[in-house]
Image 1 (cartoon, one colour):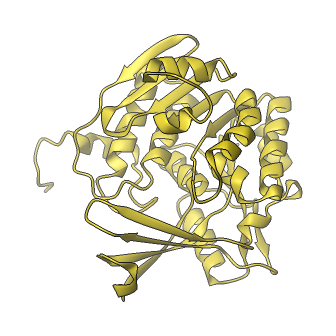
Image 2 (spheres, helix red, strand yellow):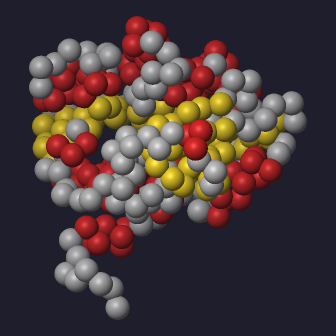
Image 3 (cartoon, rainbow, N blue to C red):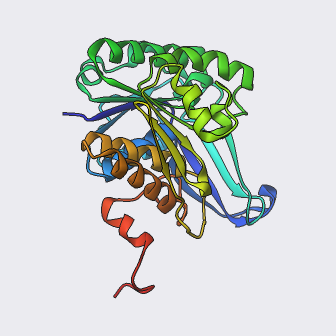
Length: 314
């Protein structure tokens, strides 16, 4: 039984090993990245069964994606190898010690060719949660159609629909994002958004007002992610606040995916609301303390390391 199904584009990820202009980099690490596959790994690491649906090229990068996700316990039977398009590429570097720069090379990629025919409908209909993001809505018309088809199938089957706005300004304008996201938000049970992302869809002078405005669009559960300021959750009319963790940030990429994975994993465990939100915040905080898009996602036992009794583990 699969607990959670997600779909989207994952890419090969080149990470520059030195800080500064990318033109000066000569040494890169090779890995994989993608919001939806990151979340699937996060949910798997938290002890629940996750499946990822997407397209990869018939190339070494596609095989790297398959082996990485499978190695992390993610079900990849819904992965399609596209012989006519390459796996997309992502390049990450640090322009300064505080600024991470991410560039995408995905035009015409296999992942952008995702279509409704690619959906593994039996797995989707039998899952407990479908998780989608605004990224997939933005990368191509066929990918957007796939998201809408998946959401419709999930709604008809009684599967909980989770949406992370995940706005990427390189993909579309705020106006385009707002128009495309509204229909999906109306069909979502769970909505994850930063304050800036939430204001693409609704108004609110503070996080609580914003959460209430977003909830009025349809979702039962609204999570407003505030980064180092914590988070606000509005679920079934009840507002909950989460205080931030004080951690040393090494890499902010993947924190939002870790937060959503923690919240959804606890929902699948039928945890109480306080524990659900606390785990989400702890997972997001833990993710920024080491490098990597998915490598830093925590397992349950890792969360105790946020409050160590000794700086050295022996």
